[in-house]
Length: 210
Image (cartoon, rainbow, N blue to C red; front, side):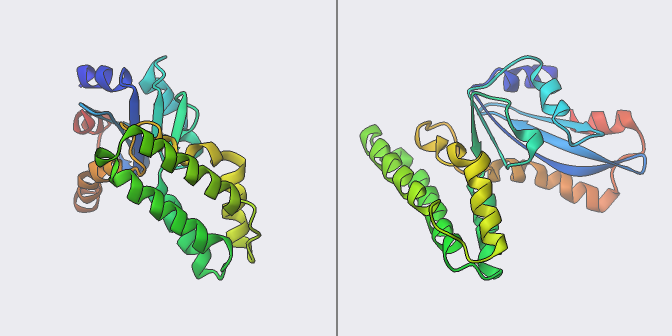
């Protein structure tokens, strides 16, 4: 397990996610840290920033891929936020009644993901052209005025802390536009939690994660 951890923490791109776990009747968190060639799991009593910080042990990857949880931020030179999470957030705003910002933003995110899925067939020059076009479109979208609080909250959140985290994958072919891979790596543990209610000892939790 330590060899796997070392491989992940020294990788240029790390994707991370977390889900709840039960240890001796108390809520813990199972974290996953994945790279191109290895996947590490850690079960800890906190969902705080200290967990990825301790896992990295001083290392700093080029790109971190995750959702917008504060504990997942500021661990790498660049941060790609999961566009699938943002598509769901945009849908919430649409369901709440926003007809100005959220629908257009959702279409923008879906188009970006579609381009990301075609990267193996696209030349670098084409990728750069797409990236510049998406950047201009994003600037235009962020000037729109949502008509309800949910849409306004989403737009303002993007402006404040995610404007530069949406299209990192357009400039780095080894970065995915969504964090679906991390969620899939945690899925067996979610099923395990529901079936067994998890662990009666801390060493059992560590053994499972290893």
